[in-house]
Length: 156
Image 1 (cartoon, helix red, strand yellow):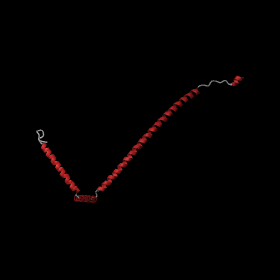
Image 2: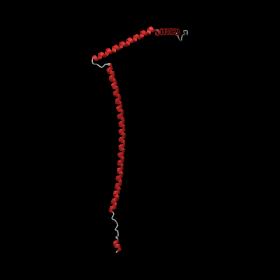
Image 3: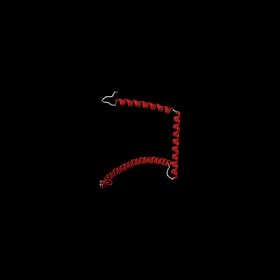
Image 4: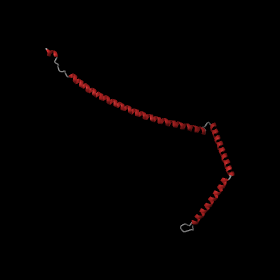
């Protein structure tokens, strides 16, 4: 792409793209050679092993120092966190059971209340019937029975 008044850096763009492509190919070739080299991989593995051993030694030294200072170690904190998690799970389970029991209790209370209302309505109906019957009995007892003619007088 030749340089034009609209893009005075066209040649620079092309050159930099070519340079980047060459650099990328060179790096890819170099890393392929390095990563295929067993000596390099062995040395990297040894370095990684040594770093892991050093970290383990450091962690052990820190834990021992904390124990000597009567402070909680990492293992203590992990154990406490586990216990806290188990307690939280148990608490959530108990809360769920409590809510379920509360729901059942509310349902039983509603049923009991409805039963009491029904019983009260039935009593009121019976009371009304008894009052009506009592009134009828009062009317019947206040009426004087009609005099019956006895047969003895009639026969004589």
